[in-house]
Length: 603
Image (cartoon, rainbow, N blue to C red; front, side, top):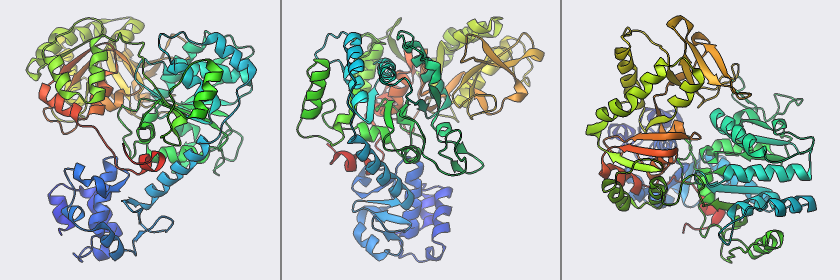
């Protein structure tokens, strides 16, 4: 059967999993006939990797899983350990739903989310005449039969719950701007909040929507009246209480209270984990209208769960019920695809597909399409036999040419920034190029690449090796700092004429100026010549350089897709084409019951 020590020696679990199991089942450790310690350690290991549960029908997809769970009758294990493994509704450490075993809290989170979303999905609203007239006047022209942006706007007006997925440049921001405009037309006193998982994503959402809303003329209403914040701030997270207050200004702050918003729009929803989605839905009355935006093909959350991806993973997406199709036809005059076999939540999910950022024949658009479909061999052949340059290009170079590429393309770029005496020009230029990698430590990691450029610039400017800071160093905030209104993901620049005058500067949200802070007043930041792909989510850059590791252990289709689609103008991928192809063939699937319980059996 094996013991916890053997699983640890084989790297099937780590020390945290090991001691978690020992803590739960100290009295069972020496009883090798009991599978409970092994099960606890295995579930803990899977939770760290983003899975919600152990799905025994999917264990064949995992490279590492204790043999006992591959070969034994799971129902027999459950029956033998019924003191600890319960059925749904029982209060026991583990819950078995007939196919999967969960830690109790994750089972409760998942079931609550399913029940809550199902209730919300059945609530519909009428659309006012004034709003319908404005829609007809503002309706986008389209060269296709169905304009999915129009459909998404209608969905957000009609439904209490909407999920809008789409790749970069497909018009999610424009769609939401129109949606906000129509809601404000119907009710100028509507209470709206905009939220995102990170401070950077929330700020970017506010900026983008503010620009998009300028074309609408709203009487007695300005976009600045709408609050933009992180989900944690929306829910009143308190590190001192160790949880959420769920409170709004004026309410008791230490008692959970339902939030008083009429409409909440949540951006970058693919980054929301199971626990955060549970707390968000629990805090809101069923009548609160919710619109989730994201890209279902991007990386999922760091914590357990792939909630947005599971919900949007629907067979025959963009096909709707006869009732929904009829209502939309009357409202817009546009035809719509109907289906009779579909998820009960199919009328709440739409995917925008036409990209306005890239030309359809650009290298980036072609590469993103191949990655999205998992066409690894085709992508490899395309990049190996094609060396694009200029607008929309993607090219692949080998690791052996990395140093040469840095010297010829990026080192002078950063030298010019460090020489600059204009903060505005320096900031715009520094993030024209962004280096990305999946690794934090080791070769080709953020640590090694950031050190490379820091040391190269010190050598060029003849700076002391022990000097920590100099003009033109890009930085990334990695912890929310509410005192200084700086948030996880904010990008800044160290700037000053000499070492005594160096400040950390961040662009202001109010105007075109920069907010400046003394170095000692800011904590929780790292240098940002190179970022992890995860940290780049919610950001866009003119040019992206993606550096692959020498092995595919940390790679996936979603990671490559996320990195490539951060770029507006060009992408350079540095690495082995075989490793790239292997990564694109590896679609991440997190074990959970969410998709099946909402939509039915997996297609």
